[in-house]
Image (cartoon, one colour):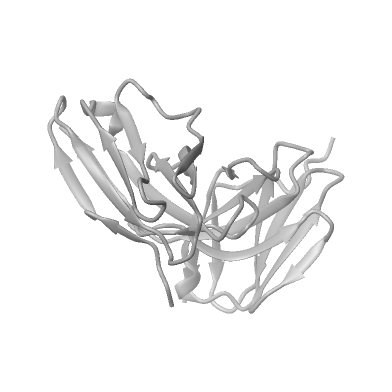
Length: 111
Length: 114
């Protein structure tokens, strides 16, 4: 069947383009999700979060979409800038348990 | 803007030696986490504190790792003896009260065991 939101380990875009980073989460009982950005040699930086009672949340230049039917999460970055180049991780959890991080996607933005 | 502080930022040690990492969470954050991140992978939880109590240390290799948060504020993670496979980034994070509050990460301590 068709794979929705196939995870890509790397994504290369041109400055000004929109970027979409996908994540498949593992636990259908998870009810809280976070996207983090991690630059080389630094700790993860919070970008945006979403709870399972929502399917979309917008921040500044970023939008997170949640599809619980297929256990898929995506991060959309509008007008991608060179400063957006980093590794992006999604994370999930169930209340009372630790965050579980997905595989990272390295975003490279060329000007 | 308040941040999670960690020290040292880098540590090189020889196997069988003891190492210790320190974390100071954001003021007022009751929950503190220690994660380990191997290069190219996402962070994995080692231990979680709520105030001064451990609430999850199921993934902490207790034969060599220990963690404490005696006064419910700052925390220390210790490895004794260090092994080659412990080389990784050790990250501390904190959140206001529970696991579904946003977790904010410190800059990490990069450990290299020779």
